[in-house]
Structure formats: structure tokens, C-alpha cells
Length: 389
Image 1: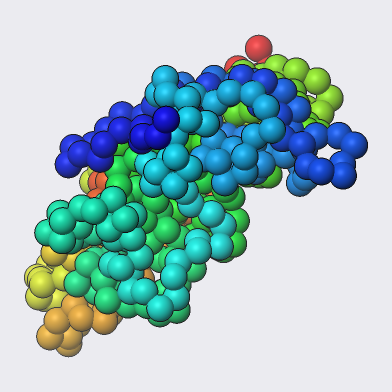
Image 2: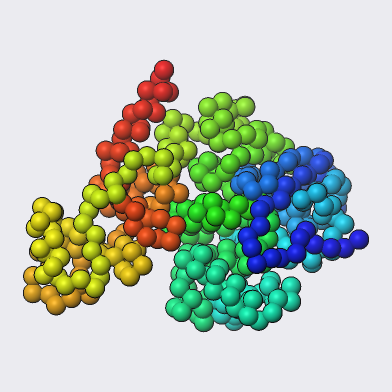
């Protein structure tokens, strides 16, 4: 019997439930299996994070879902379909897959990389072109700027965005992610995590995410599975439940010290009252003289320059403006910012980097407001009171 999980459609699809029942993987010449009788139900449309030490079998477990690794025994169903009775190539074309080193084809352009799976599925050229443009916009890459670039011409973060776009291009119900953000710097990693949460809020895929970083697991997961040797499940629960009540010493070791501070990772910027009008925002087309007048009227020294799509670009001080004919090149680029999907831990790091106040952006990078250190410290104080109660 062959087939696919679903036929790709123009509309977004909801995720599919994944059920693994007593799944085992043994390799010839080894005394113990790499994965032993692993059973788990992954809810449709949720992010489930597999976290555990190196060599515990978490990547092998995930790769059995799309049969990159063939199970020795057990059953795997995706959306009610037996994955072991679907042609492996067809199965993989209906499951998105993103990895740490991205795996982009170096001699393909960005658009060609993203179009790969839709092409294999025989979509027509216009549909593919439209989908590529849609995906690039979705992950925050301007098609006019990046479509014809080669991977070597991109930063690590941009390459990872292309990898995610490629994994989502055929609109799969399931997305497998194997430490996809592990090879980028901390700020870029945080931005990519925010981007994934934003995409998930829009698309509702079923995501299985592998990491060894417990903080990343807490930030991203609707549920976390802490795995021990041979992928034995030590605890499978929501992040807040694991933080509050680790099941055993191994799980407690992953949680580590400062569990109450980790609660900042459970609170999103969207959950607190950030300032929507604490700074003066001006368009990059405005005349410097007019900006000076606005700053003087507002009694403020700094303005935030926005582009035509209302995305924050630069901070400019009033003393930099006299004598200028335009705002081109004026001010200092906005550094670390946060989105409404960001955690308060991300916000705290951005605030410290930016000197006391960080920019908050929406789903398309547009300015929503700012958040300051006082907001975060009030939340920390409340968490401490709750913890000591």
C-alpha cells in the first residue's frame, strides 16, 4: 500500500496527530537497542520537544517518524495513517524537515531551494512561484532581495530561515526539527525561536523539535519529553508542570537551579503591558527639521525611525539632526528587539543589551511599542512572591 498523508492544498492545513507505539530501533552488532519500546502521542497542532543528553536516542526517535531511520519494530501512525505502509519517498515529501546545518543545496538559489519539494510533487510553475514568494515573506526575507542569492551569500540566520521556508513549502501537516538553531549566535537563535513561534501561531502545524537545551525546550514546547538512555521517557508534560514538579533526579538536573527565574520563559511579551507610545516613532521619509520639532514638543531626546512597512530601523538623537537634509544614515541601528512571541527572559536580555528599553514588534516586524526594565522586574517580583507563598 502506498500513498501520502494528504494532498497539498493552497490553504493552510492543521497539524496531524502522531502516535508512536512500542517503537524500537536496534542496530546489528549492538547489545542494546538505540531506542527501546518508545510510546508517545503527539497532539495535532502542538509543539512537542524531545530533550535529553547526547546519545540518548532522541534524534533517532524523531527520524523514525519520517523513516529516515527505519524502525525495527512497533507502529507509527500520522493522522490515523500507518506511516510504515506509505512509500518512504512520498512520506518524506509530506513531512517538513529542518536540521542544524540547514542542508541547502549550495548551487541552488534561495528560490530554487524553497521550490524543491513542490517541484517533486509536480506543482505547476505559477503555483510554485507564488508559494516561494509567500514562504519568503512568511519567514521575513524580501523576495526581491534574496530570491536569486546563493546560500553562501546569506548569513547563518538567513540560511536557517530558508531552511524553515523549504520545510514548510509543500504545506505539510508535520514538521520535524533536529536542533535547527544550534549553529547560530545567541541573538540570532532567539530571533529564530521567536519566528518559529510566530509561524506556529499562524499555521498550527504538529512540530517535533529535538534539542539538548532545556531552556529552548521550555520556551518552544507545548509539551516536553525529557528522555533518558534508549529514549526512555523520564517525564512528558507541560513546561510549567516539569518546572514545578520534576519527576526524578535526572529531570531535576535538566531543570537546574533557578527554576523560578526560568518561569520568565513561560511568560510572553504579549502577556504583559508593554508601552505602545513611550517613544516617538517617525517615518524614514520625514524631514529632520520636522522630527526636531516633534521631539521638542514631546520633550524627548530620541526618535525611532521606521521604514515604509513600519519596521524599526534606527534610533536617532535630536543632536544628530540639525543641518541634515534627510534621515538617510542618521542614528544607530536598532539592536536586539523582541516580538510579542518572545519570552520575558528574551525581553530582559534585549533590554540589558539596549540600555534599559527594547523595541517590541508584531508578526511582520512592525513596531508595536517598547518594553522596559521596570515591567520585567515587576513580573520577577510577582514570581518570587508566588514561589515563596
